Image: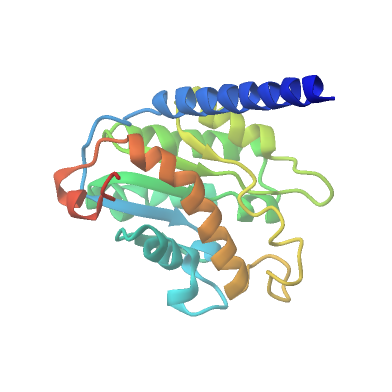
Length: 225
């Protein structure tokens, strides 16, 4: 019995090591990870980012800012699609000299039945345009689809082909749970925003630990213990 216990223990340790190594290699491949350029962390998004139906301080960018101890500019606009987000990218994001941009878009594309090919093309252009300014892009994978996540592979493909950092299924367990959503079924409530912010913060911390920080934000960088 002891022999099998030890074998199980070593098998578990090996699996953990492989997962850690894979995660580490993935982060290292993120474009502009070591560029250290720019001055701001910005969220480009739609009504979820803007905090529709909740207080401004309850919207996930604000809660995320508190959790990370890092100033975050909220550029969420209610009703935005990937197309309208792309149109205001220059004025709302590029001119602010971003270091890291969190892209939260796609939900309104689904609701308005915009062809997935257009959504993918717009997302890809947003990501690459930001990367051309030496900024890191974090792409939030939106859970979109009535019965299954029809957009999962779309976000995976964009992230992989552009070397953006993907946080998959960011809204999983939020919009499909009455505890965390508003009555309209498409917006998180305050608790849902808190859960989303915690989820994003957890996924961002390993990336932030490996990234080269710009001088404008060095005062907010966590001290390594």
